[in-house]
Each structure stands twice: as structure tokens, then as C-alpha cells.
Length: 106
Image 1 (cartoon, rainbow, N blue to C red):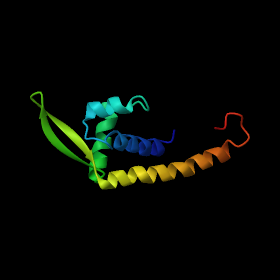
Image 2: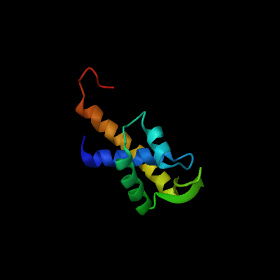
Image 3: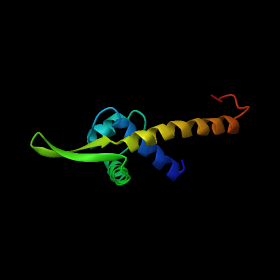
Image 4: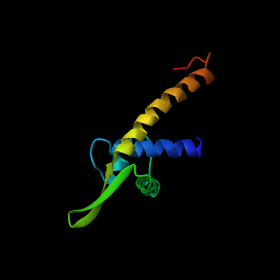
């Protein structure tokens, strides 16, 4: 898969993982795992990039005597998810065109 496409998909997956409630790194990995494999070494640069782009915010809270970073999606982050949904419709249209006439065309 094209690295830029995959990068954009992972960004949206991470945003979707925190869309309904704040979360932390390990939980995000668990939530995304059924859909796409993501490691800590991949996740944390994504989280920093999304924070720099103001698509999420981060706060630190104590949990079992340790500090844990919790991530919260911003309005811009929610907007990015909506943009992705609209873009995906176009991608699916292109996919259908490219696979036109093939038996497994869904």
C-alpha cells in the first residue's frame, strides 16, 4: 500500500478510536487492532503529529500512581473524520471503475 495513503488511513483510525471518549496509547492500540495492526512505535508519532495539527489535545492524569497521557479529539479532528468519509466515497467509486468487469467487484 502506498505509504502516504496508509499514513492518512492510520491518522483517521486513531482519531476514530478517540471520537467517543478520551483514551490513552495502549487502549488506542487495542481499539484499532481488530481493523489494522499498529505498534507503539507507529502510534506515538501519529499522536504527536495529530496534536501538532490541532486534531487532538492531550492531558496528563495520574492512574495507579503513574502519569498517563489521555488524548481528546477536537472539532477539527471530528471534521477530519467527516472529510475522510466523503473522500472514501470517491475512492470507492474509483475502485469500482478499476475493477469493473471482475467477478469479485463488491
